[in-house]
Image (cartoon, rainbow, N blue to C red; front, top):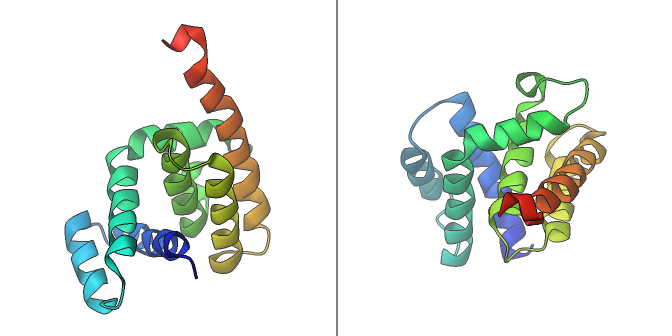
Length: 144
């Protein structure tokens, strides 16, 4: 498994734990790494960046995601799907060094692996809309 794929899966697990058992990200990360001592530093660093960035921008990310989930409320989504959408939206909006297509593909694969049968399609649709709409909004002259 590629390092960033593993880091994204770890980020999902940590964000899930944070939502189920609200504690500081630092405490959750510390406990997580005790259980995953074999994780190399690159994976730990990318995971930490995703978790901290997602939690730091959580309100904004949730607002963006809410605009693009049709006929759903964010709090009614499966916890796994909600957190995949959160960290992937964080990557799309804040990490210019990662191509959005890579982020979306990784998120879809993680949804297929960890969630329900149709979650991959759902995640793909929402993230594709976010990528096309929010990215063009960021680059429009009125957003300068």
